[in-house]
Amino acid sequence: MIAAKARFRHARRLERLAGFRIPDQAFHGATLEAISSHLNFDRLDHTLHDQIVRFVHAFLRCNCRESPLCGCPERKFSREILELRENGLDHRQISQYLLEEYGIDVYPADILSFLEDSVHVLEAVEDIARLGNIPLLADAAADHIGKLER
Image (spheres, rainbow, N blue to C red):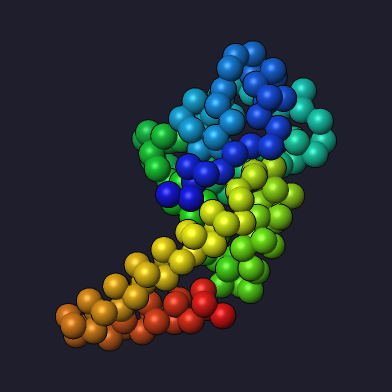
C-alpha cells in the first residue's frame, strides 16, 4: 500500500517536540498517535505547523471509534493520490505536491507503481462488472482508468 511508503520529511523535529521516538513513516500507528494526541502544535515553526494541520484535516478526520488507527487515514491518502492523478498531475508532480502540502516524502517511482497497480485493479473490476452485467460499475471503472492513464 502506498501509505506505507509515505515518510515525514521532518520526522526528527516532530520527534523532539513529542518528547519520544516516533517512526518517520507518516501512517505508522505511533506517528498517528503522536500527531493526534501528544504533539504541541504551538511549538512548531510556521511551515511545519501548517503542513501538520493540513495532514490532520485531510487524513485524520473520521468518526471511527478506533481513529486514527482505523485505516481511514491510509485510504484517504490513497484516494488523494488517485484524485491528484485524475486531475492531471503526473507522478513527479504528485510527489512534489505531497511534500509541499503535507511535508510527506514519497518517491515518484512508488507513486507510479501505485497508479499502475490501481489501473490493473480497475481493469479487473471493469471485467467482472461486465461479466456480472453491472454496466454502471463497468463504465465508472473504465472512466477512472481513462483518467489515470492520460
